Length: 302
Image (cartoon, rainbow, N blue to C red):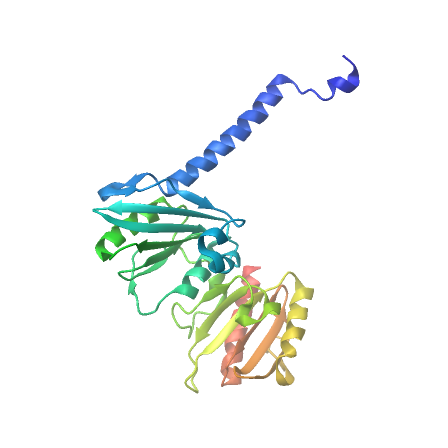
């Protein structure tokens, strides 16, 4: 056998090892999927048909236009199933998203504030027609196909929550917001179009009480690619402001302030790989104090 032909053959043990790794990975992936939504749960919940799995390429086949929403949060996979208990069917959708921030963002953007609290995952809410919660990088919905029984839906949510990996802690990025004066549970994350502006990209927001006026202060942090990108975001933001002027924090960080049409007074500051600011401020000194603390948190995070 010539040397050129020998080169295309691998030793048998290497081939066997490679095949074993591929096979084991496939089995492991399949077993993880089955662990999330098994054939049955305790208390009489049973699958009515095999679990269906959707990816970014075919999610639109199930939810059409709404697929864009989940794709904006880094959608990875959907486990879609129906469980039946005592003649009532419950549709279960488990969305795996990019990370914990994405799960929080998708949950809070869809949350109905009039719903009752659901004790499952990190946060949850429940109606007689919908139970929803998130945990780690997973967002979950349970929808009865007929008249739902809230106690039964709570039990099913508890079973599913135990199958989902990860902790029930809030994403650590939310700790960038100063705690003093923040409105509880007002934080959220947007996978794109932060504050409805494409150039702001992805980032987090939170609301604070103000000593003046009736409206809350909305603080945001845009996660830029790098320092240069943060400066570009600031320049693009400046174009949206009327009567723009320079403003500075006591520590020497310069930014821009002005009037944002229909959205009140606004600020933005570029700092390292962040661009942070606010909408609707009424007291400049009060607002700058929040940003001084926010700046400390950004430094500690780095």
